[in-house]
Image (tube, rainbow, N blue to C red; front, side, top):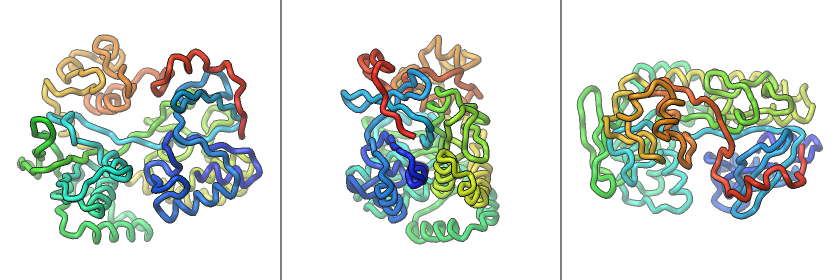
Length: 408
């Protein structure tokens, strides 16, 4: 939204393509068609509308049939989108780690459960254990509690020492205020570092979760387990377009430009740093795409502050080695193709496992099992191939054969 707004305010013809039904992504998921739920999101939405940005929502980009063109789909409709400059702001998704029982109904990603509640899932009176790692856990727990859920415990795998060092090094008034607000909203809810889920228990749905807490195990009755181990950048489209990846993130220069000319990238794909950093990077990318380098430079100092926070996040919430011992031999790792941990142990790399077990070849295209196997086995995916999202055969056949609508 920030990139599109800034570029449009410079006089370019700009379109924004969002795979959500409304603008705002996961952070500013809208309560109505035109206005995001949060005040900051509403301000950016109004500014985007005033700038005359063309909005295309509920559309997934699945291919790049030729240079300067993207193929996208919504329902039965195929879109060919031409561009002169392209800003990728594909965000991030939750990282899931397999453990016994993690495929039970009501074991859901922390951010995923929040999104479902925002979309109408009733949560009042339900017991929700929130577990994993990262600041998202606190934000999700606070939101669910606000919506009437009971939060028996928040389990954070990071240590007290790491969290204390993170707090001491923060030195950002805005972040400190956010932390204090969350602390107030979660008053009375046990927050337990050095803890993580080791098994979800139940017959037809989750009934309890067993956690490791300071070396001991404890079983907590619950209706939901909201579980996520920080975030994974969505770099699939960037890889498909030929953008260079470094340490799992899209590599960009000082103006957020990738190694591919006229393609920029902003937000979580360049480093997990939160909404404030994403907004700054988006503005730099939008201004740079419009040829306003001098204006873009004014945001460099603020971006560096956000990047320091991102580096602190990475250090604090890095996964501990003990988590690689969670799955049993029978634990499903690839949920799409029902591939258990024992079958994957026989292979030395992602490619071998994929060829022999179909791991990563289901509808999610390795978005869940890929990061899991990277952590469990230190594997790296070999390539990204279209379609990067499921698409109709008709759309694949027609991709590249329509006259694209070109924007900046």
